[in-house]
Length: 148
Image 1: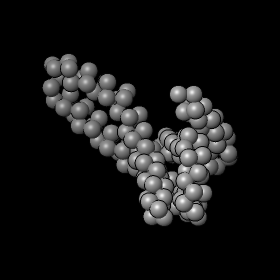
Image 2 (image 1 turned 90 degrees about the vertical axis):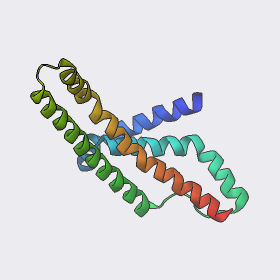
Image 3 (image 1 turned 180 degrees about the vertical axis):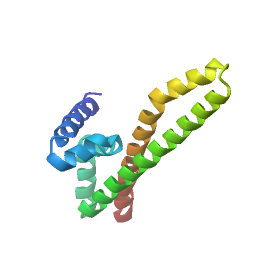
Image 4 (image 1 turned 90 degrees about the horizontal axis):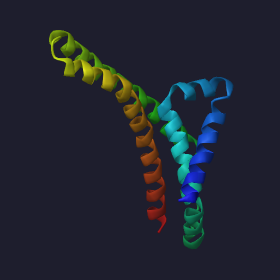
């Protein structure tokens, strides 16, 4: 359990440090999907990096990690998936608010709107960051399988 905890702490610290970069940091700070992607990739590389490096040496594999262009592509995907998930959550919240105004007497709908308002954006933004992390991990796995 300790290595994954240590990787998570390092990824969190790097994620916080990146937000201090003048222009890029503000973009990353405002998009939790990009933060999740960066931290997920850091955790993946710290936690499994030595095993992947060993597999690369044993199997004489030249490169399995995505390059700069592919990584920027994953960041762009993360950004757009986060925006789409935010728009989806706003649509759901609007529909529930609309239904709540029609059925004012039913308090459970108002309660549901309040709960979803607090949680839906955060959950969907995490999903928006995790999908590109899974794509990144699959890229590495397919690269290893290609050479083995």
